Image (cartoon, rainbow, N blue to C red; front, side, top):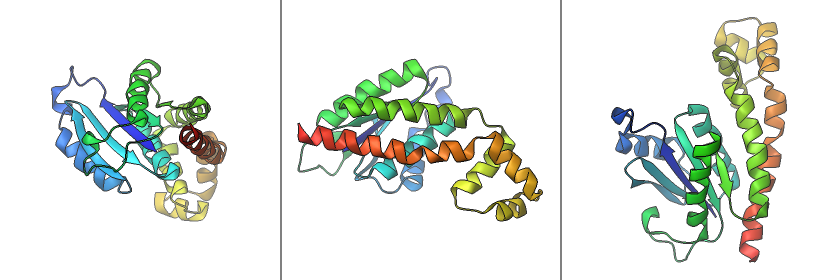
Length: 199
């Protein structure tokens, strides 16, 4: 399974950023497919448990885009039966998530820990995040719509720009190249999970 631990960046310097109940509720609304929903696990940390690699990747990329969180993903077994609250859950996935969030503080990108496949997932994920991080605001407007399945013509209408401008924005953002590695990240996440269950 996929245990996520996220830690608020620079929370000591900005106490107002510690509106953790608001963040918890926002995460629960924005990422609604958790097996065990988001809860505050420490003063400036949130935790959740996911079963699906695709849902997990959505969370990883979204939180990386925000640039306000250290994001740790632990992949591995979880003790069953599951409790009702993620804070009561145990297992190696949560131990790995703790290691991962510490690693994220060093790298600045989401970190993944678990079986040997976790390091492959992390390498490709970090590359995707680095590409996304370098996008301009105008390019991000176009890629956000492209990720929702909008055609270039529809994006042009939504942004009130020429379709040729949409094409240039997506090209400069390396949207096609970055989006094409998502299946590879998913494969590595699934392999990491499968391998951990074989142990």
